[in-house]
Image (cartoon, rainbow, N blue to C red; front, side, top):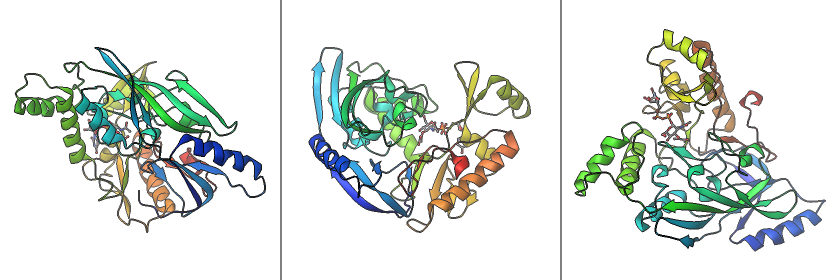
Length: 346
Ligand code: EPU
């Protein structure tokens, strides 16, 4: 989001043993130690101007094949690997399952935290395990996908911030080039035209990946050019009865069925209907092509408070219109490194 932030101390970790050494000293130094804050690629955080914490930055690199059969490949990826580069690499190798998650910014170690998801696929679909360090007890753990307690944009790591430092992620990818998921929105049409260019009847995983890259580039602003955190709000999940009542008033409302008689509503649609496409409080305004994304038009000048003001304004207007409370998706970091997930505190 390009919010200027100065931290007291930053510790870059290029291998796991460095963390053991750092933590051994840290626990001894009761007098001087500061709170710890784990920062990955920084693409989904809202930082304070001054961060009075010791920032731990996992930057370990490496992609290793740990098992291989005719139908699948197991890989172990170190936390500091760039996510999109990993997706491109796996597809180029003929290892499939991550192609729908192309062009998501950030590093691999952060991907399990919010269980990144796009175009019908979530990280949990191919994740096998996470190797992570438990900061309070200074111990390493291997967590299975079930241990990670994944949900929509949610996990154990997200619910217990600054508790775990993820160092490796294990995936099981498949090798069947005919198995693709291209049913979401206009993915099918774009993927089909890529397939045709390549002389294929059906889209292959690489075609789906290129289609998704195109669609994302059209709808989502490039954070390098116009700072943003991707979707700023989560798509709210409401009871089916409330959705049905809203549908009677707004027949075009966009929603997806969820378990337990719930509906997930497209927050971008709600914001656009509330006449807030391109709206907000300058310099923090919603993107013209996708109202779910807040953009920062004053990079390194706008502050966390500016973001909070725009968030509150948009959420209030949406609530007045639809009686639906929007929740923030990116991580709000307080000056002491603690995490304020609840936007009502802001
Ligand atoms: N819509 C509008 N107006 C808008 C934006 C969206 O009417 O300004 C409508 C669209 O027409 C569509 C529906 O809302 O019918 C859904 O929009 P879209 O397909 O663009 O997806 P989304 O729900 O806005 C979610 C994820 C994205 C992910 C896409 C594709 C969340 C919070 N966001 O967006 O994730 O890329 O689906 O799967 O779940 C991210 O997390 O940063 C992110 C970009």
